[in-house]
Image (cartoon, rainbow, N blue to C red; front, side, top):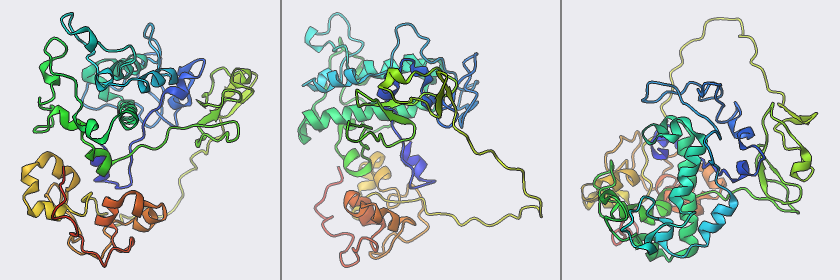
Length: 388
């Protein structure tokens, strides 16, 4: 999804939804996450009726449905749960068999905090479309939630596995423990010819994305990095702010006002928001031609070399993601062969943010002039470098 969005705006990144700050509230349904500024809220019938995604309707015959916290015994992911995950030592405790039969070996049964159970818990807590597998993507929160599940998995991998283990440790194929569709070499539907174990590749985080640090604070630094969060006054953890008109009690949060706005008489009052002004009088607007931005990029400077070696046809599902321009997945507006040019309009901004060193592959392909790479051929080192 992030790559698809970047065909329209190359600066887009998908955020992850860390629900632990919401879970620290007495009432997680009061979280500012469900405010009109963010993911919006549902009316009494469960229809998402406010915010940017109000009456959102994808491929279903109804707008997004939500029933926050109404499912019996449902709960959001807590920090305690994540701590339990990070204490597991084996991959089959994380990639656990969540629907095993009684004939599955007992040592293959999942722990209580297996990632799949954590994933499902938030789906159930949100309810509505999120609770139905075939409808879950009708709620935009689906994508943010799954980004967090990926983050949990990657955090565990980095702390518990070697680089080689990350790509090869996969639960044993056993029909008594899981459907054959989950076996290591089964097709990852609908992404044929990719197979399930390919999802363990290090190349995703090497070449395509990384995760921003989760919000945190301390007794010496109370800044959680967002106006939607506050630092608990005694526990020194980040907590989601409470939206109006829910109840508030600073004493419950170490003496800190928990509201997005202000706590007045134990009730949150929303902050002032700019109102839209009246339309300006004058001549009718004229249609101005819009200059089309470049949206077709390679993610690696070796893409042209790999394409010339036949890589686009040898592994089309992957190369057309990483090497979209060279493999013909899209049509670039600007030449992609010049070794001394900036193809991306935000190269200077990226460089100021340190991305010449933090996003080496992307910048070496698309911001060569800004990153002072004009003296080195784009193809340098590519002859012996493997894509996957």
